[in-house]
Length: 81
Image (cartoon, rainbow, N blue to C red):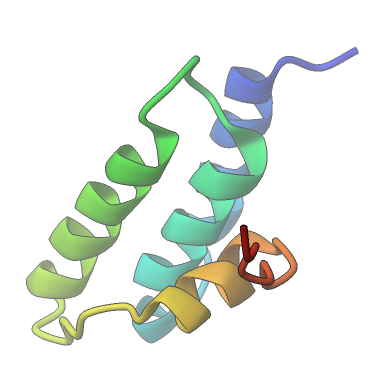
């Protein structure tokens, strides 16, 4: 079995070979999918996305819908109580 941090390392190697305009979003998606840390993965993913996008001068705020698409999580329905 491969650990989530090992998967993160493999994924980062693949991302480095991608076109630069896709790297920021792919880093976000990779962190959300591999969950390398016990908690705060979402914050970490946003920070890494922001740094990558700012370096490329392509920063835009990810909407909640875009974040869900990148993370592969299905949209959550509100719960009415």
